[in-house]
Image 1 (tube, rainbow, N blue to C red):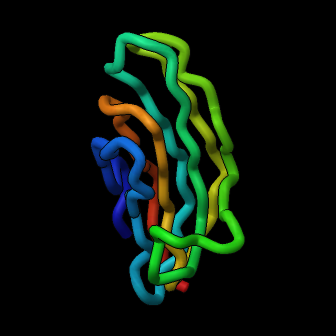
Image 2: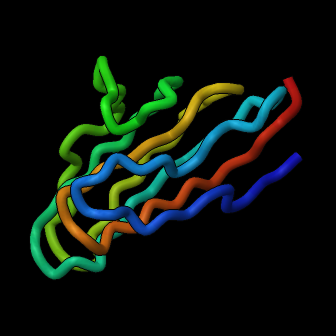
Image 3: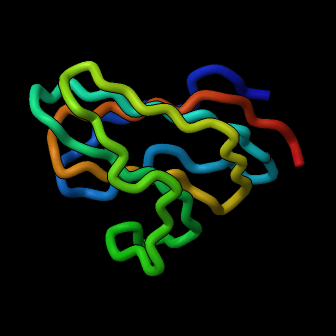
Length: 109
């Protein structure tokens, strides 16, 4: 059973990024945080999807939408996310310098 930091990504501006994918035959209980190193105001979207083409998500999978990151060092955190095989956690920001960390644990189904 894996636990601790499960994934970490520096997001690319204007790109939906797959941050974490649940392993086969596992259930993952997650907390996600996003922090910015960008000096201005920005935002982050965080979502869960099963779609393979994450750059044309339909419907939009956001569980956090336009969560504000108001200045350098600003942080948002979302817990209680449970995903399983075939599901992915994705994130989007319009700015450079947003880092998304996924931590929690994986257990056998």
